Length: 154
Image (tube, rainbow, N blue to C red; front, top):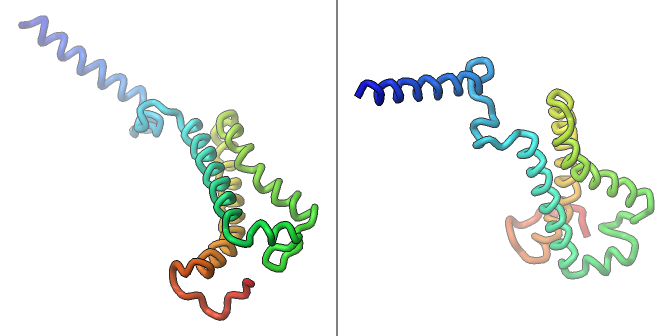
């Protein structure tokens, strides 16, 4: 009975010591909460999910009736598609791809700064580029609220 009690007390002490070693400043680190998955890998996986979402949104935009014909004319919503515009869009789409790699290799302070800047840039690009598509989709299929006359998309 004494040996069993000693083993239980020893096990509890070992568990408490492991928790204390895993904590930073008296609190558990985020990697301990996610069952051992490091933060860098989680952020990298989120960038991968974001890239798949952007790809799916583009595919859904292409199957919208009249979308490909409009792109083939060289104008989309009265905006001329120029090589400079394509270069800008390519660079903006490369940011999430680069962040998949950079979020795994950069050290913490630099990683945080780059992830915040890249996510703000990507979010602005996605919302800014997707808003015209969303309005056009709602207009074509009659989903969502009725659009006001102030929307200047044709």
